Image 1 (cartoon, helix red, strand yellow):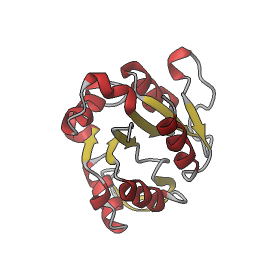
Image 2 (cartoon, helix red, strand yellow):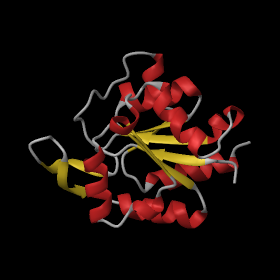
Image 3 (tube, one colour):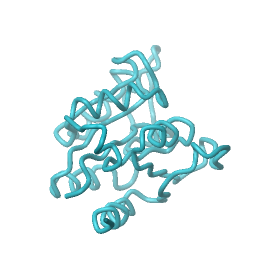
Length: 173
């Protein structure tokens, strides 16, 4: 396997933000998954990939949502903005995940970041040479790159398409 790891955002990437029920502290206490979210994690884990959650979210949110769907076991690392004190596109959130997984700088180009936000997920990945995959299944966030850094390497409309992207990446030299 050429790819070293696959990073996922949470909101509108794995969790459907339109279904969130939040408490008074804006922690999501309940939400539904984006179609195909658990299935893609299961498949990627079966293949043998390391998976990280790299998300700008509250601690309770990711614990509540992933716990509800018994999804903690699919992740090898959690890089969460509220725990770390910085948000994407700050490179430190990505570097925390990379370091936690033992990925050296020469291999950043063999890591995939899947996210729905051009300004945060795509810019953050592109700045470190991580393969950016824009999950563009809705238009809740700006959906037109405003500069070079916001241009994703790949764009998918459904999470199942990620397998095709990964297959292409594994076959390319």
